[in-house]
Amino acid sequence: MRKGIHPDYQEVVFMDSATGAKFVAGSTLKPEETIEFEGKTYPLVRVEISSDSHPFYTGKQKFAQADGRIEKFNKKYGISSKN
Image 1 (cartoon, rainbow, N blue to C red):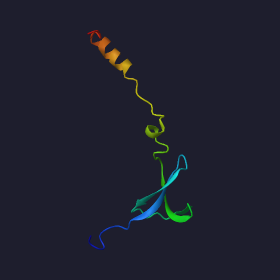
Image 2 (cartoon, rainbow, N blue to C red; image 1 turned 180 degrees about the vertical axis):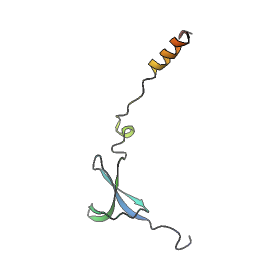
Image 3 (cartoon, helix red, strand yellow; image 1 turned 90 degrees about the horizontal axis):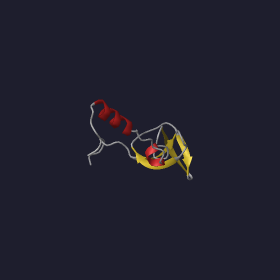
Image 4 (tube, rainbow, N blue to C red; image 1 turned 30 degrees about the horizontal axis):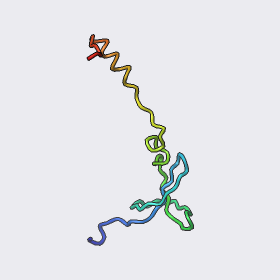
């Protein structure tokens, strides 16, 4: 690798603002804020959503109800749903 063209890679703590969950990961971000985590001081990056609060990962995902739309379309155009 050429020197001087790559950003510094460091361990940072990502904190979910919604749940307060924290995890350490590598990043090239350089936040101003720091936090004490597991006995070490790390730079802190606050995120609005993570796997700890995202509906897909928490199992609280809502699915759109498509049945009503299909039935409405079929009724509008006189299509029978029987095969």
